[in-house]
Image 1 (cartoon, rainbow, N blue to C red):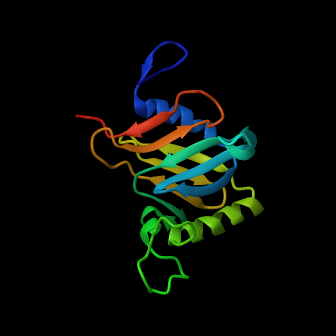
Image 2: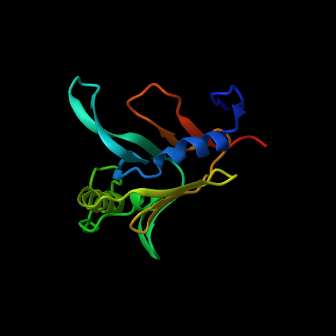
Length: 178
């Protein structure tokens, strides 16, 4: 549970609704992954110091997905969570496929194409919905949609929303005990 400024305890779902509403009007910047965790960046770029002491640019807002998810454009599938485990177009079928090698899987290829598209177009969030179950839908200005479907066992994280450059609380949606 989280607290709002009035001191009233909020459910995880209500906290998720309130915080993700901040995305409306913000630009979608990029999509990528670390292992099988998919990250998306939104808002203006911010320059931050990385763990090596250098600088890098990140989005004002971050969404991390560790549940079934997909990105669609109208009726067309752009990419989805299972694409991380599917060989990319350059795989010849020789030897073992290692999905975790950067650029080797279908997701990496499509995420690179999508990020290039996002760099050339100003695509902004038009609406955000968090269902009672914790599923998340982010609608964007050009017909793109990001959908995350909460699934998992008790205490498995499904998705997380936060501002990576600040020490604010993260909103973490997970499977709760009944």
